[in-house]
Length: 420
RNA sequence: GGGGGAAUGUCCCGAGCGGCAAAGGGGGCGGACUGUAAAUCCGCUGCGUAAGCUUCGAAGGUUCGAGUCCUUCUUCCCCCA
Image (cartoon, rainbow, N blue to C red):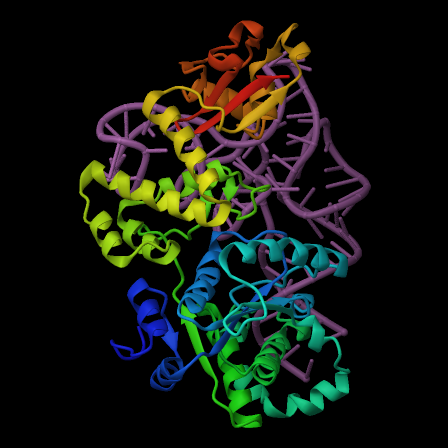
């Protein structure tokens, strides 16, 4: 939205063309710097969960674009800041995590970055650092003397993250109030260590990022820039990132590649082009063609999106399996071994097991009551036959094609029950 | 320190004369229509096969019966000092 329409650097041109830019602090200067030579830029990630979800994907892709343009991505994992808690965009204080949890989360998150970035010691290679490395070294008084002097309360009170809480008369704890200082110090530290000139992030990070820019310019008189991405929502206005089964995690253990593929396959028509540009490496002209498809044909574009996005995260083989499983399940009505599977001891089928119980165990529903309601509404199917009685017994006689029982809740949630 | 309000279905907002599993939204789920889309329409939305069980900030009490009345406590807001 902000800045000139045509940039000179490959990096910003690419971001512009693919829809990553929301705001840039000094567009011309940054563009010139990126056109002149290799720059280093960073994005910070908090370690509040063991896995990223699609909401973080824009940022991760942004670092990927940076590297593709020949620049150096720096991934900052907030081992230190996570201990403080970012108040941005939240109207209540988040539960603070223990050191052990944070350490475990960091280890888990690291594996995801390797799928999107090339790490190493070369000049364009990505590096990953944990801000606990420097933040934890500070003593309180030293921190206040070194950095506290550069921040006025007057100004801090004007930031959205703070104002939001105050306006809503929600408490903002002192520890959270300090978050923005720590993030600014991160940027300064990276500027000194890696000559990092740019911090990127979601639009809700603008205030935090600009603080770092100001700090660097003031303390070291060095260039520093901010760049934020727009908040990604679906065309119908919903926050992106929910499926039938919950959040769209990037870890395969928390969301199977099949479900990840399905998430992208179910993209709204109006979002296909935008998502292809943001979340795949497909060339822009190819995307333009896919985007131009009309009516039912746009499903081909959604498959391309699902294939590309899944391949990038889980590998091309996983993507092919997911695509094939979906093709068999949806276009032929059959079963594929790649569908989500639930294993049950063969012995349990002899006396028979209640359908409602089985459906809950298999993860199709949260409670037996829910299964019952599903059945009443005509949404429960066993081997593609609508089943109105959630209490009936499921036995070995229900084993169908491939020696499995195919349970479905609605048209999209399918689980194969496999006796072992 | 004094006075006044508020907390509801463990997703959110929000009604609730002492008989309430608790109005109404949003969201979510299912069905219909389509194209595994959107929009629209319909149904469902505490747990349990059922009898029944457990819910309305917490703990006590009054009552045949309490979300609803009383007491104490917790948290949040407002006004006065």
